[in-house]
Amino acid sequence: MMLRRTTVVLTSILAMLLSTAQGAQAHGGGGFSPGAPGIGDAYYPLDGNGGYDVRHYDLDIGYTPATDVLTGVATISARATQNLSAFNLDFEGLTIRSLTVDGKAAAYTRNGGELTVTPRHGLRKGRGFTVVVRYDGVPQTIDDPNLGLTGIFHTDDGMIMAGQPDVAATWYPVNDHPKDKASYTIRTTVPEGLEVVSNGALTGTKTRRGLTTWTWDAPEPMASYLVTVNVGQFDITSYRSGGIRYWDAVDPDLPGSSYGPFIKSAFDRHPEINGFLADVFGPYPFRTSGGIVDDMEGLGFALETQTRPIYSKYFFTSADNGAGVVVHELAHQWYGDSLAVGRWQDIWLNEGFATYAEWLWTEHEGQGTPQQIFDASYADFPADHPFWQLKIGDPGPVNLFDYPVYLRGAMTLQVLRNRVGDDAFFRIVRGWAQTRKGDNVTTPEFIAFAERVSRQQLDDLFDTWLFTPGRPEVASPARASADSAAPAAPELRR
View (cartoon, rainbow, N blue to C red):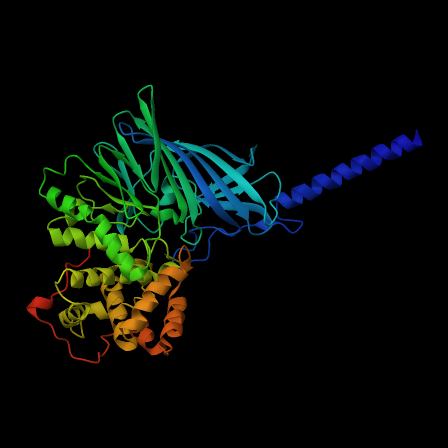
């Protein structure tokens, strides 16, 4: 009897100790602690989250245009990068119906756009885990006083998803920062007769009981703001060229409009433009490509949504303007998508490179050299013009997409080209795209890379052009002339 009683007591104590240890793990004890509620970006402190790395998002959503209601099941496959007692996801507005971690219901709280999840047991560093969130609601368009409308746009027959920097959280739970790229599978169910266009490759459609499910697969890692789902009436053209599969989607209302011929002429040049850019920057970084244009009033920008940019119809007012914006957004597939910013202050690495690609294309088309465009642009803005006051290497969140980020960014690259010479310059831009493919990058890393390739000290150049307000002196006087005018300014472009 004494032996049995002692065994029972010891077993009870052991169970109590185990329960206490598990509780400590779940609430931050025993070497476990919550992941950070932000990924560390100075401009957007609560964007992204710490403590884990997402590998894949499987998004199964439904959308009803008549009500704008979106239903979703997000399955998030991740790996802990620390001993986690809890972790955050970015998620705004929509109602959560259930949430599990590794198949077991988990506790969660919400505060603004922060969703804090506390699993039943701590997640050890290096362990893979799966989060499933079921949710629904009407996603809201973001009306940012500095950046304008962005995110979910409700159209006459569906929706468009486009915007940056932090729109993904308005329609699925996410680690919403470019530093945590992941692959995606997106299944979208809509009323039969509507089309769905997303990233990557269309792998199948299935219709049942008046609803059609479209499945798109994007295997290459992608920043969350580059994910898009577009629902509505689209004429979809699919073809293969140069080893790349293309899907182009154009609203059927547009071909008969004044924009229609220029959309067609620009999209017909997709393979040519990708080939031109590949000659300069190295092989196209993805397996698929294309573009999307909806006949939406008021959409005032284009966006480099990965593999399939979204364009405002307003860009297609001439053959040159249409081709120019396509060059810009396809150049982003190298600089902005494959090479994503590691912090938002380095946005010039996206926009300066894409704008410079337009300059190279202008020369290819026989309409002016990059130096001529530089000279005309330099002459356009006198020394006392506000254009020169923005530090484009650290513009601040309010000025993130201001015109100098684009134009002065491209001018910086021309100054670099003049300093190091053509051979070194094109080895820099090509090597930058190829050696950092799929990575996150920063301005200091680019400067170090340019110095290594050119074997020159370049701190003074970049400090002057990226971080010093004022109109820099140039080695030769501006040679502005009527035939060297810069191409249409990308005020509406992102």
